Image (cartoon, rainbow, N blue to C red; front, side, top):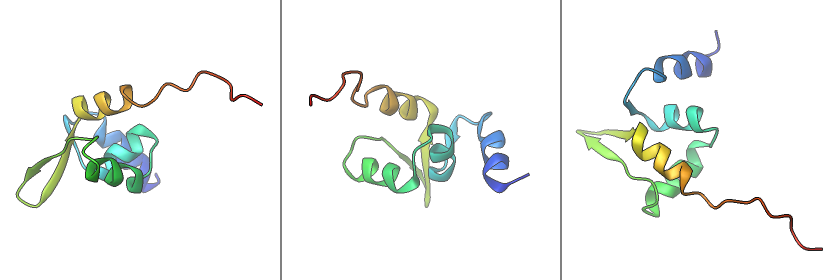
Length: 74
């Protein structure tokens, strides 16, 4: 089983996610998540040196992304 699939399966049961796990679950890249963290749009928790993103914070971040349902004008 590829590492990403293994990470995704084990992350499904966790309340707290690492940045790579959150990236895999959200279909976003780690770089995008780190940018959102730096900009204060994605909340993180720290436990020692570990960076943890709660499922609730990840869900809130994703739900607050801009809604792009309109077609661009030509």
